[in-house]
Length: 134
Image 1: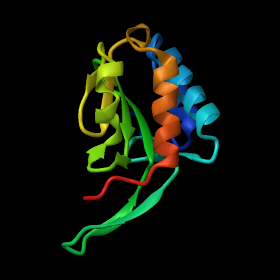
Image 2: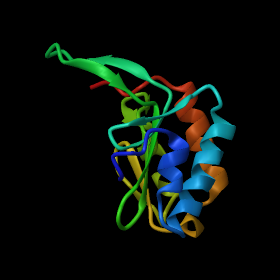
Image 3: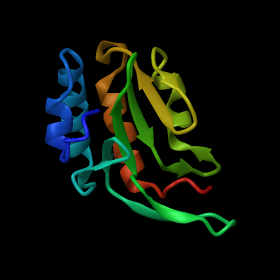
Image 4: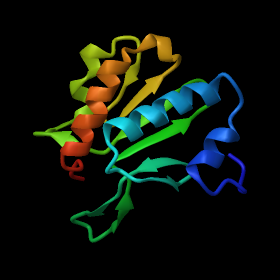
């Protein structure tokens, strides 16, 4: 991503089509479903909301609740929340069968591969949940 990009809108505008349109749809979905999570740039991607973490080792910092990044082969939706002892994204794995779902990340090759209503539900749940513990 271009070092000149300073805002979420500039991040999206700098993407080539069709990725720009896909990221725009997901950005708008996140803003609609979790309006309390303010968008910002963090670590070269879009972040929504913020929380402070502290590991037992003493390391601490700030991270986003939900993140969105355009990667070479897919769009990554990062979810920094848990439900019980599981990362929230993992709990949606069966409902997003064409996405590659990891512990805290949903990798989407094409928006047509996922049900956007399910993605919206995941975003709402992430906004309401607590961040995952280290």
